[in-house]
Image (tube, rainbow, N blue to C red):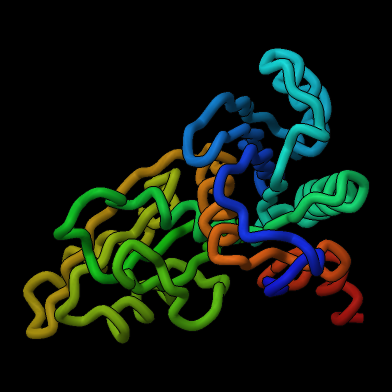
Length: 257
């Protein structure tokens, strides 16, 4: 996802004005940050993909903050997983702004944006963070992150699993460890909660915390992008693409023919 230098003369950013964009779900959002300070955020939830109303919200937010596109030092965008249509619109917009204004862009995992909200200031925080997003079809987008100091490190790959498959994976990876499941909707894993409770008396007991975090991901996406930029890690605007995790319905139907 990252290109070490983009463009060639792009410095490691220290003080940045960032526009962050999330079109991965029905609860989409836009945020403006100066360094790690949130200047403004706008979000709505609807039955339509957020991409359908993103530009109206963006115009309002920039006008309210008296900003222009040229003022930004960094663009950041959710790169998936999530809505196929929504991700394409968001990524296309962020890449276009990056190219037109010759500013760097960073693609950020929506799952990491969920995980980053989990116990950020608690020194006794769990070792594993398991972010969960709704993948529809009774499935979950999820990933396993390990805490390394103040940073999260992806352990394995982002995947799509059923609640039961997720529980089996947690049993395998997190036995005798503290772990937190971070989600904006606790109902997403309700089908598996009885299994967590039944496992509490087993020899390899699972210590699982369920933490509800905000589904408004743009602020977290912006902060993660700034951290990447400060390490000199930028996405390549030409090759940045969505991480869909699974195939689209159209692809699955085509394969079945």
